[in-house]
Image (cartoon, rainbow, N blue to C red; front, side, top):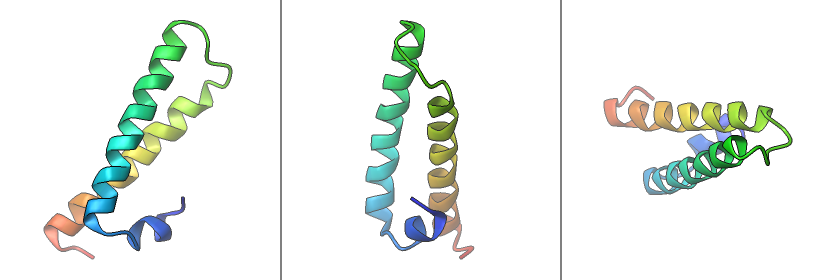
Length: 65
């Protein structure tokens, strides 16, 4: 998803998306540790997605945007 698509979601949907992304990151790290992960760039992509979601939630909490 792009940033504008995330901005259009409600706060509850963002929190749900963040939880799902954390689960995805956990699974990727597990697969990385057991040497089953083929594309290592997926970990970086998911970490950035977590950061985007946390930033959006903080912006909403502080009323920045």
